[in-house]
Length: 440
Image 1: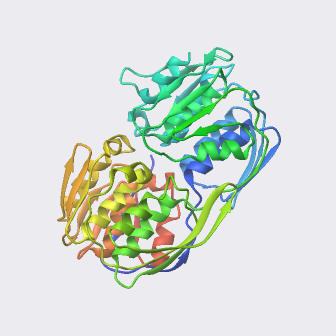
Image 2: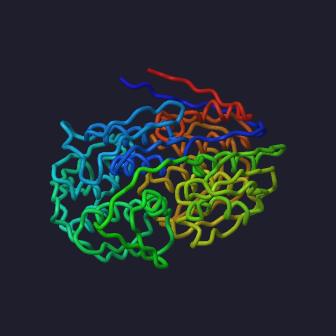
Image 3: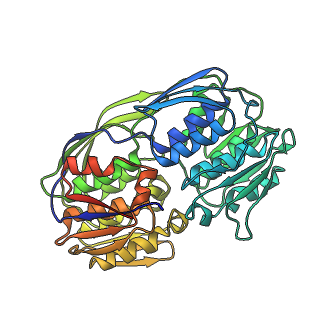
């Protein structure tokens, strides 16, 4: 039996000092996928040694790729080339990782072998039709459950996929990336148009591996004409993990924090833009480019926040950060309103409902809507909340403890290990009064 983990946060505290949060999860996944398909040896630094990225790593080992490490975030990938993957002997188990499952479904659709993708209970409840339906129009053969969920049974159709021109109904980097990876194995041009900008790590990294990708406005296209050349990758710190500390230092009086080497890809910086609109004091220092990705140090000092209507164009640029932004909203004077974020209902949990439920338990006036939430500022009390196995929910309610007036207990926190195993140690070192209990 796996142990259940409970976080107990004592009220108060402030965040001070400097830290480097773990490597970017999106880029860690993609470095394994593209490094495996490249010709030659790829070296990766800053790899996120958390369960989600390790699930991707194991899947490629199961398909015959030799990968050394990770040791202190460093990996060596012996690429097998675009057509060098081998049939896995067993199902590919991807744990809690939606990114792994959605991207691999595109990559594996065009292989010469069959495969089955499985995941944990949470991943097995997440919608997969958003990738299997457009893949089917390319000629892919992928069977889901009746509900359109995993396990995914993929019949490899090497040489039989054809490119499509696809306008995504919902802005989703995972869907875009899935179709681009399938497009590397399809006849003709695969073109994806997005309704709003989403993270572009796949396009940037493909270019870094010398694979031709064409970008025109909100349209990106790819063909099977090309190969990947091994490259060295230095993965910056994950802005989604930094977000907890950006909010924590913004809401806790006396905080003064420097977060080093954070990826500030413009498709990911919605969290900074939204917090600044609320009045946060965040400085972007020492900007530089590492491996095609912009990186900077972020200096954040406590500042009183004000409620805002969150601009809808920033929603896709901060989609993973909304759980902790809801905590910021509870501490911001007046009302904060989020609209246009229905995507939050199909994440690791229904993040709109789960956050609203938890905030209400803590005495905050948080009203969920179909596509967002309306939050009135007010004191945060103590209580017991359930994270529903969602890592970002667990960490967000931990940060709420900085402004709470009584202890907060957070149940079901084991999945923090999917993205940020060091969270507890780093948060306590910076000044959060957090204790972790394991129960059989």
